[in-house]
Structure formats: structure tokens, C-alpha cells
Length: 453
Image (cartoon, rainbow, N blue to C red; front, top):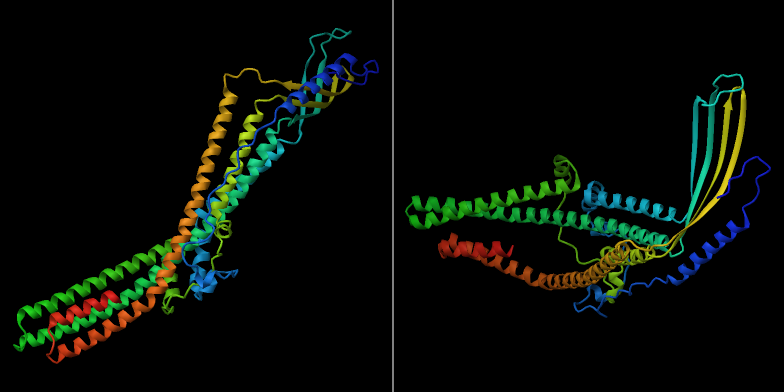
């Protein structure tokens, strides 16, 4: 390293030093050229060519925006939005995006030169006396800029940037996945509350009916027309219905409190919003599934995130391999210095280029090789998880299609069964009131109707 100041007697670097620097650079470039980093194999996952389950709407493709609003229930859309706003899962996913973005900035900075500034001021007495015999006070002022740059010969820093970029994309996909999961959980809880209230209405009507039957049976027993055992059966049936009604009402309260916890809406406000809501029959499927599984899977945030993790792990393998090859760094500095002592001052300005430092890994006890093996193992793990996520995604879509198809196919039969059992119960109840059917027959018809409802 050669230092320059205002003294005209100082010149350029000696030819021997220039030749040495050029030779070192040539050696580093030669070694880096030999460092061809093998890339991990491309990961592929078996995807079926077509769905085995039937598709809704015959597989027609329609792009639906604002999916939850199309359910025709404004309260559901409001609850979903509220739940996503207060969900800790969504907040954590958003935080991971910021962390991944910061890591990417740091990885990109490793490819650029760094520049640091420094300044100092000191004051003290000199050990050497002046011509007058006094010991002068020396004030020293210094300021400078220090620059350094590591040349990414083997591509390790570039691989680190690629890994950080892929993880940023994966974090963004996980945020979308969290939002979808929270929305689905909220919708499930909302529909659970709606169905619970529907069933509570059924059990309430059933309890009232049985209570009326028990009252009439009691009057008949007192008049001597009904045996005590038959009346006991009617009273027991009424008590059972009241217990079922109480249990169903408690379940609805639990569903309500779960929805309060999910949405963050106060219970009193949520009850007020739910009060005017009229229960409606669930709508038919208003979405479409692409007939080609690959087109569906690319829309799944979990599959996309798993793929980005594979790419990041692959880049980290390259970064670990690059650490086993030579590294070349260059530094430089510009400095200003001023010394003041005994009424006189000296100014010294300096600038330096170098050193051009070459680092050759020779022996590290197997640490770098172990790092490569660890990175390769993480890559293989990410690849296995990616394949598993693809298989799981195919399974979930297939199961959802089967459930959707079977539910639609059962709907007419279920409705016919309810209508038939209701007609049978009405007829049996009329017969019982006219003394042509027993209480056992009435209760059997009632239980069958309740199960169908």
C-alpha cells in the first residue's frame, strides 16, 4: 500500500508492486474460473393430468373477484374482513414479509462496495520539548473515508441474493395463504352458528310439541284414560326435549363466542348484527375449478411457497460451495489530518488504494465442506416437502370435489325424506289425538322427524 500526501517527493507505486497486484488478480480469476458450481437437480412433482372427481359447472372457467361478497351475505363479508384485520396469523405473515424484504436488502448490499466515514480529535502534550524549552500542547484532527469491496468471483453473494429473493416471494405467498385460511375459518364458524340456530329452532319446536303432549297426557291420566306408565313416558320425552333444547342453545352460545374471538367484534355488537339476519339456504357452488390440475395448483399459496423454498435452498447450496473457493477483496481510503502545536500547524492529506487481498481457503477442519453438505440436506428436505405439498393439494381438491358433488346429489333426497317424515308425524299426531295411535308410535315418528331435520 502506498500513501500519498502533499509532499512532491512521493511518487507512484513501484513497478514491482504493480506487477505483484496484477499477478494476484490473475491467479484469483483463474481459480474462480475453475470454480464451476454444480446446481442441484430440478425438482419435479407428479401431477395428474385430470381430476378424478367431477367438476362443478362441467369445469367451465370463470374468474371470480370478491368471492365472499358473491355469497350474497354482507355480514359474512364483514366478518371475514374483520377477522383478517385482527388475526395474529395474518400479522405474523406480514411481519415475515418485512423480515424477508430486509434480508434481501442485506443480501443485495453484499454485492456492493461499502463506505465508512471516520473522524477523531485529540489533544495532548508532546514528549519532545520545543526550542524554547517548553512542552507544547499538540492538537490532532483527523477525518477520512474508508471503502472496501469484495469481488464476488465464485458467485456466493449472488446466490445469497437469489435465496433471499425467493424467500421474499415465499413469504408473500404465505401471507396470502394466511388470509385464505382465516377467511375459511371465519366462514366455517359463521355457517356453524347459522346451522346451530336453525337446529335450535327445530329443537325448540320439538320441545314445545312434546311439552304439549305431556300436558295432555297428564290431563288424560288424571281423568283415568291414560295409564301412569304411558304418562311417565310422555313426561320423560318432554324432559328429554327440554334438555336437548338447552344443550343446543348452549352450543349456539359457544359458536357465537368463537366468532367473537375470530372477528374481534364485541359480542353485543355481533348479536345486534346477527339479530335481523334471516337464515337462508346455502347457495350452490358459485365457483369453477380448472379441468387441468396444474392450473389449480399454481394458484395455491402453499404450493407456490414450497416451490420458492426449494429455489432458495438451491441458491444456498451454491453460496456454501462458493465459500470453498478463493475470494478477492479491494479496499481504499481518503484521509485528512491536521496537527497544531506551539502556534504552528501541519496538514497531511492522504489517499490509498489497496490492499488487493486474495484469500485462499487451505484448511478449515472440514467446516466449509460440512456447510455444503448441510445446505444440500436442507435442499433435499425442501424438495421432499414440495412434493408432499403438491400431493396434499391434489388430495384436498379431490376431496372437496367429492364432498361438493355428494352434497348436491343428496340434497333432493334429504328434502324428500324431511317432507315425508313430517307428513308421517302429522298423521300420527292426528291419530294419537283421536285415540287411534299410541304415544310410543307418536314419539317414534317425532324422533325420526327430528333426525331428518
